[in-house]
Structures are given as structure tokens and as C-alpha cells.
Image 1 (tube, rainbow, N blue to C red):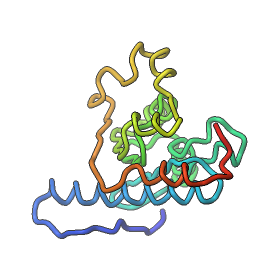
Image 2: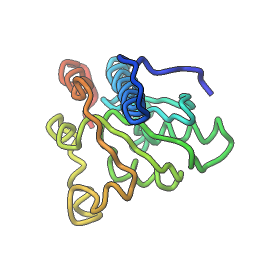
Image 3: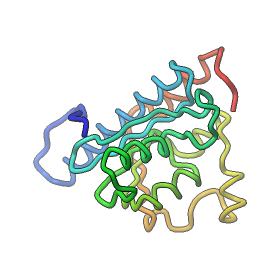
Image 4: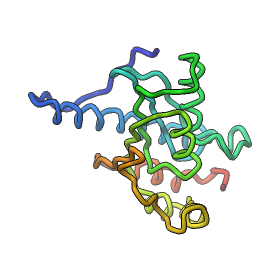
Length: 178
């Protein structure tokens, strides 16, 4: 396990506030990974997997770098965490994603038994940047979003500038299109 801790902005007294502050800190880390991914030639997505408050894996999108359409940040982080822990199931993990997971990433998280998935930017933000996976979701479930997101463990938390990775993507003129 990496001994990385999130950067928190405030100290609070209640468990709910602490959880929210911790969630926001890990989401900010995922967003920073996504921006770094863009600068390194990858896509504008980042993911962090946390167990018991410790980062066990983190990754940026590697699709274009590895010529692998499945190398999304969430899938890469799940692979890394499973290898590091020696177990394909991560029932004590939380997946923090810079953006709402696509259908493939959501399915991978559930195959890994990750009970909680926290994300920053909604799918619509990715769509506006040219990452329109809504059509895939519509083909799979007849609509752009899962029917019962809470039952899937999906939770969006507002953080400052969740679209920063997509801004970096638009500003990068030598990016490889998807």
C-alpha cells in the first residue's frame, strides 16, 4: 500500500463531515491524476482506490498511450490494486474517479466487488469534451445512466473545478483523439 494521505482543507468534528472532507480530498487527487495523465499523453481521467484511508492504487487513463481501449483509469487502478493485494475482489475499497465511470468501468468495479464509487464530474461534462459514452450506455441499458445508481454504490460529490482535466485536454493541441 502507498502511504499517501489526502490533503484535507478543514478539520471537523462529525464523522459525516470528516468522510465528506476525506472523499473530497481523494477526489481532488483523482482530478490531479487526470490532469497529469493529459500532460503525459493519456486521456483526461484519473482514479484512486482507497482501503481504510490508504491509497492502494492510482492511475491515469492509458488508452492512447498503450493502444488499449480498456486502459481506462478506473480499470487500470483496479488491476493495480488487485495485483498489489493478491486478490481480484476489493470489498473494502472505495473507488474515487475524476469523472462518472463509463459502463465498462462501472462493470469492472462491480466485478471487483467495490461497494462504493465516488466521482467528481458527471458524464455530461465528459460528453461536452467529446467523450460521449452515453450512446454505449443507451445500447446497454436503454438510457444514459444506470437505473439505480445508489444501489450500485455510485455517489457524486461536488468539488472545485471537476472539469479541470477536460480543460487540460482541450488546451493540449498534440493530443491523440479517441
